[in-house]
Image (tube, rainbow, N blue to C red):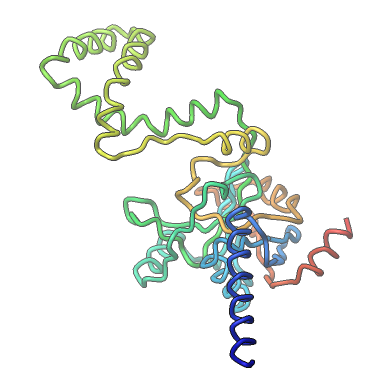
Length: 295
C-alpha cells in the first residue's frame, strides 16, 4: 500500500510539473516575483518573469544583498533606455569589463515573446565585439522607454541594421569580373552626385547578395509580426531584441521612469543631478496590489 501511495504521489508531481512547464511555454512573461525600487524621483515596481530564471534569481539576490541601495540612474536618454546600478564615481565600461573578466556574466535567456517594449527591464552588457556570447552583466540593468513606431520607421530600422552586412557582400560581389559593369555605373552615379540613381541601382543589385548571405548561414535582421504589432501599439527599442536579455517590466510607477528621463544631462548622458536608488526590496504579490490600488 505504501508503494502504491508513493507511486501515486510521484505521478501527481510529474503531471503538475508538466502542466506548469506547458503554462510557461504559453505565457513566457508570467510574473512570479516583484521588486520595489525607491528612488529620489519616486518609486516603481518591477515584475520579474519566471521564464528568465537565471536573470530573475540573480536580480532577486542582488536586491536582497543590497547591491542596488545607494546606486545611481547614471545614464539617461529620453525616449530610449535609462541605465542604473552603478555606485557614484564608478565608470560603466570599467565595471562591465571587471564583471566579464571575473566570469560573472549571465548566459542570455531569449524568447520570441520577450522583447524590449516600453517599460521592459533588461540587463546591460559589453558589446558583441568584446562579448560575442552576449553575456549579461550581473549588476547593471536598464529600463526601456522608447516611442511608438509606424510601419515605415520599422522598415527603415531593418534596412539600417542590415546595411553593414549587405555592404560587405556587395563589395565582394561587385569585384567579380562579370559584375564590374555595375560597379562602374555606381561609381559614375557617386562621382556625379546622382544620389537617387545610385540608391535605386544599389537597392536592385543588393538582392543578388541575399542568397550568398543565406548560403553562409548568416541571418538578416527582420522584425516578426508580433514585434511590429507591439512596437506600433506600445513603443520600445526593437534594436536590442534577442541581443540583450529582458527579464521583467515596470508594473507600477512608470511615471517615475518618465520623470527620470526628463532630467537634463551632460556628457555621456549623465544627469546634472544625482538620481539615487535609495533602496530596493522584494515584495509579495499582495503588497504590490496594495500599492497599485492606492492610485
